[in-house]
Length: 191
Image 1 (spheres, rainbow, N blue to C red):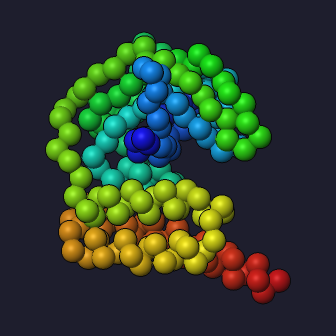
Image 2 (cartoon, rainbow, N blue to C red; image 1 turned 90 degrees about the horizontal axis):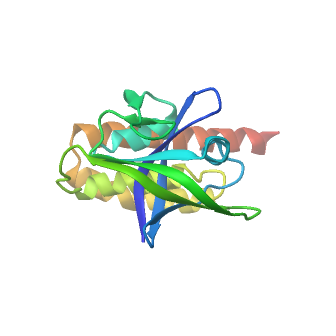
């Protein structure tokens, strides 16, 4: 099973990188499988640490993917890294094993510290739709455009029926990213 989270890492100079990330849990370990090249991959390999942030504000997924402000970060308690201040919970992780791959290495991390800040109340359909579109936007250069636009149209049904202001804002940011990608592709087709 894959859990959609926000992963925060730092580079060798302490500069933060925050991105949505699907993680797996297996035998007490967290598995992160970033595509190459990836700042998340580089940062974890450099420092040996990451922080998994569990959030319920889907704007954070959209903001991280579209270069917007994701919220305040504070130092992690036990590892070299940062966590989101507005998260439901966070897990501080230490890298213990790397299973290399030419496309998507698997990083196995142990949980060295975990804190629940507040309870999760659940997602509605619009929030789930935003997360699904965020996954598609994170793969704009890997997926065919028609697949993305077809899924976007289907996901919009849940937005139209159940979205609140936060979900509508996140949705718009992600739709803009898809539209910008389409425009880039059209310019490439004209050249």
